[in-house]
Amino acid sequence: MGTVRELNQVPASERQARIDLAAAFRLAVRLDLHEGVCNHFSLILPDGRRFLLNRYGLHWSEVSASNLLAVDAKGAVLDGEGEIETTAFYIHSRIHLANPKAVCVLHTHMPYATAITLTEPGRLEMVEQNALRFLDDIAYDDTYNGLVTDEAEGDRLARVMGSRRVMFLANHGVIVAGPSVAEAFDLLYYLERAARLQVLARSTGLGLRRVPPEVARATCDAILADTPRYAGAHFEALKRILDREAPDYKS
Image 1 (cartoon, rainbow, N blue to C red):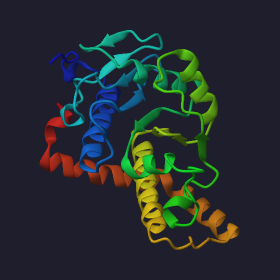
Image 2 (spheres, rainbow, N blue to C red; image 1 turned 60 degrees about the vertical axis):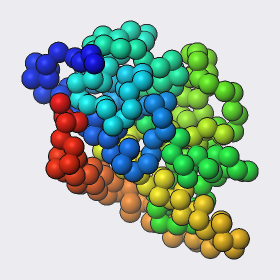
Image 3 (cartoon, rainbow, N blue to C red; image 1 turned 90 degrees about the vertical axis):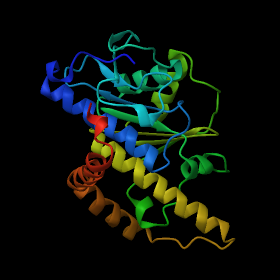
Image 4 (cartoon, one colour; image 1 turned 180 degrees about the vertical axis):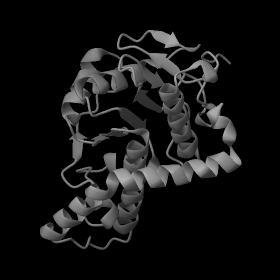
């Protein structure tokens, strides 16, 4: 299996970026946020010229800090061995280029959120506390055009997403973007939790209990104010589990 040069020869900031993104992959497996080898996470490296992307064909339980590929905006693999998936490149590169705040971009077909993309109208309802953090922050792409295999489709998705942190892709899955791995992964985690509760609530056949708009806004604002601190603590706690049970993600 090809790897980058020895991690101890990589600048400390890049090494930490690799470790954090590798942790996100491993944690996604444990939390059932992944599918096959066809979902992808990316992270802009501190130099701003390259981004990390998972190598094509690896199961996420195999991803480690050293086998992540460093890629440029043209799709050239600059560090590491192996190939990148075409759809991964065109989705992630175009979102990174379009939105400077999208430092970390996570795309999954996680089950409950994806289930919502299969419905009409395919919206996450603001009826539960986990969902309220996403108030006015979800873009919806209601046009499924098949696989993303060129810049034009990647650019279209980037335009639909705009500056929002979450996008639901009709008949497909979801994308989240954040300023760090910790914040992006926290978004992904709570998006799936919110989607799961909505699917379960809908399955009862009963109506959804609505939250007054002013309460929804105040709750969202309170959550967002604490997001960097909370997301950091959450991600560090999850990494401690990996440190005890699967420390090879750092290798």
